[in-house]
Image (cartoon, rainbow, N blue to C red):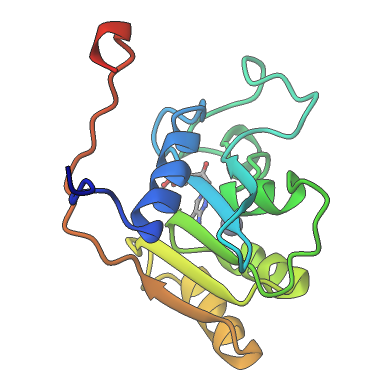
Length: 165
Ligand SMILES: Nc1nc(=O)n([C@H]2C[C@H](O)[C@@H](COP(=O)(O)O)O2)cc1CO
Ligand SMILES: [Zn+2]
């Protein structure tokens, strides 16, 4: 028997972990996940967008519009920042970060300061915003490579049925 052919690539695997992490998000509008990987292709951090620990996600707003303090924006911690902060205690220099959404300017700062050298994203749907433009400017200047993930996969299904393993 020859080896299986249609296994997923490293990029698809790590973006898949980012997307699975996003499934933990309580944000009703936009669920983002991120996964940090070292040079040996070991996962060293993962996260999703959510409120800081101790801030009850039933008590804080999830609105997108309205008075700033009554929206989610001042409170939510982005997936990329959570992945950095949740890392398993490694030096992140030379690591890459997989993220479902292109990092904002604040996360770009954290990515650069952590020493992460590559950003792989799935969507850049906010690419024309000032935040994204500032993010790209900083990443480029700091020498952090960014690229869109390459894949032909549209959907990937997981079965939790024990009879299907
Ligand atoms: N790169 C990102 N990582 C993230 O975790 N987020 C989070 C912040 C919010 O919880 C949500 C975006 O809200 P919305 O305006 O698309 O409904 O995703 C947002 C971005 C975009 O820069
Ligand atoms: Zn961010």
